Figure 1 (cartoon, rainbow, N blue to C red):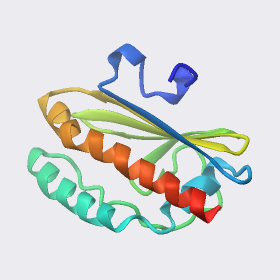
Figure 2 (tube, rainbow, N blue to C red):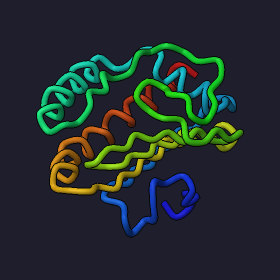
Figure 3 (spheres, rainbow, N blue to C red):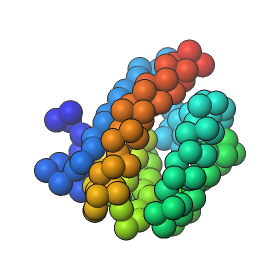
Figure 4 (cartoon, one colour):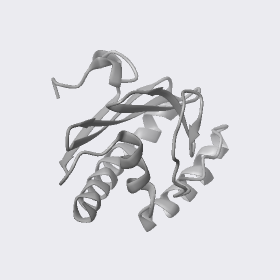
Length: 157
């Protein structure tokens, strides 16, 4: 993963508790927002259950509920907008940088395009024991979910 620009990560590599970057080659180039809209158009059914479980457990530790992905498409976004529970921190011609931060962890997901290649990079910094415990099941699940989303997107392309 040497080719990931450090500005696409939530912090320095040596501070990350989690880093996953997966790519797919599409039949044609699309914008990062178009990629987001396509990925979120029909969220995987398991995600609804996973977010419900996440919210039920995390709320007991003072973590706000996030509810999951709405599937609502957006025509445009600006810095400061929200895409579901993510804060849009940067909008570039080649990338959307999305974050969610709380007292337990900071997450950045980057939807990054290079021509017809789409990359989803997620990085996490944990702040305490709950953040570390949270990432134990979420880290491996996240990798599988993103892999499934990218496979589905390639089939749609």
